[in-house]
Length: 193
Image 1 (cartoon, rainbow, N blue to C red):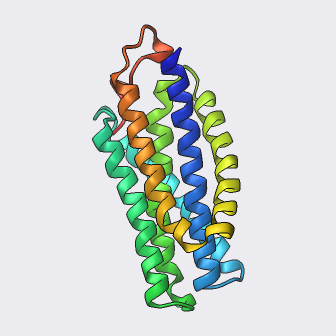
Image 2 (cartoon, one colour; image 1 turned 120 degrees about the vertical axis):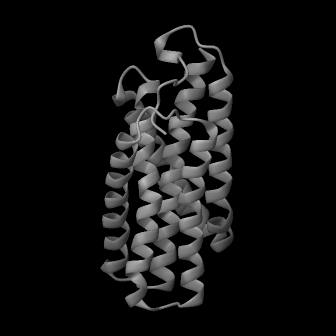
């Protein structure tokens, strides 16, 4: 029972993380690069391309086991890409010709999203449960990201991604330590890493 609650909370929290990260990318590009459609289009296309790459990488390297270390590395790459994009905005603001670099960095964050679905689909009996929980978290995350950014601004963007990543690593570590009596609540032993 507790394991199920933690797993559902983890998937929901991952959705919040993805949405907050995308919201921070969005406001960052809208403020510091371009408020026109290329910024939104870059975020959308780069995130989706990165998600496809993450799915491909996860399937290519299946059987390596999903550990808190692997999760930490994926989250670190995702968050680091965001902070590099943020730094680039501060270093060379209002330069639309730099949008392709931001797109690559957004793609790195998106790759973590694709990897998440491939690697974690086995912790639920149905992948639709994982998608449902992550999607609900994503909706909550968009709202939290919007409210956080408009009320706190750049300090929110500086703190939220790394704070949420830390929460996710903590949740996953706890989930892995709980003994699980059945397949629905069993820890992932043959995951994708």
